[in-house]
Amino acid sequence: MQFIEVKLPGGLPGNGRIERRARFHSLTGRIEQALIETGAAADQVGYVTSVLGTVLASIGETPADPERIASLCVADRQYLMLRLAALLEGEQMWLKVTCGRCESFFDVDLRRSELPVKPAAEGYPLVRLRLGEHEVEARVPNGGDQERIAELPDDQAMLQLLQDCICSVDGQPPATEFSQELSPREIEELDQALDEVAPAVCDRLQVVCPECGHEQAAELDHYAGVRPGENYLYDEIHTLASHYHWSETDILDLPQQKRRRYVGMINRAGGVSGQW
Ligand SMILES: [Zn+2]
Image (cartoon, rainbow, N blue to C red; front, top):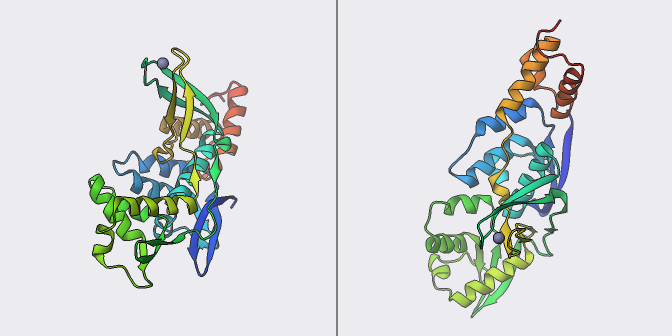
């Protein structure tokens, strides 16, 4: 079994170290089928956890179970979704933009591998800072934190996130009221400290509308994910099964690239189903 290894911009803390290696399973038809079946989810955070659970083999030396995937920081999860998109669709992508001024649609051509990625800074995933009279230790938010606040209104979500990410106050577990009593300026300071240490994946690009010349920021949503085309997969299975008489099981176990190569050969030879 082949694996595809990537280096996480943050990494998973555990056993006194940060594990930065993650491995994807080889992308077989079976994995693509599982991705198709994961389908569109209203809950985007949960969707990302289940997609990554399907495609990831391990984080460090240990299998990538849902709990560990949820414990990855937000940027690591975005980075893995970006790499997955590149594995499924290639590095080239077209970002669809609607101009904020003239409302015309245009595409921006970019390469996924060229999107800037900022690695975590020293101290990740923790920050220590002084807020008023207190020494506070907090950690960078992860997928599990995002999942817990997904359904909450914005102001409550912010408070809950602070509560979950503050690990200690003056060396003691924080009292529930602590995060509620922080001033907007203290929250801002904490947020900034976390931003400095956290890794980040570029999710905003400056683009210029070709129609009206308006310069604007376009957002990239790495969590939106990629869904392999269902018809495409089943067409390819059908072509191979008809031509070589292989079983569906065997075809689904082929890595995507190999499957496409065989399909390409059949197509070039002009032979589609049942011609012999
Ligand atoms: Zn425009």
